Image (cartoon, rainbow, N blue to C red; front, side, top):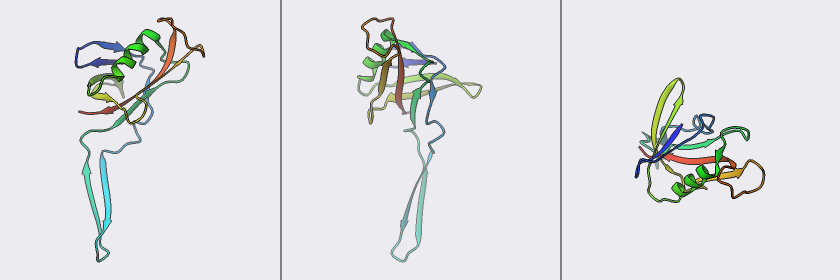
Length: 135
């Protein structure tokens, strides 16, 4: 898996052990149901073009990143209006999507594997990354 900053083409390699926890819990179809004055049900539906949430995480014993990588991801998550290309392999195919960090919640969470924070750039962290698909 690879995350590429489209503003400067720099990338971070991520473990393929990261997986989307909510990938199958989203529908492209959006719907509203309203009643007209005479009681008739009015249903309107459309297909969403973008906006799929994409949360990447892994089990505690997998997909660790170094503090150096976590620092870069944190810096990227702090950039407003920045798009990234997420490249990954899934369902037997190579896939790509354009995403932005999702700031409706914490866009990134990093917890030290050792259980305490360390200033060493080669110490390992578990991460959770929150994106929203924009293209």
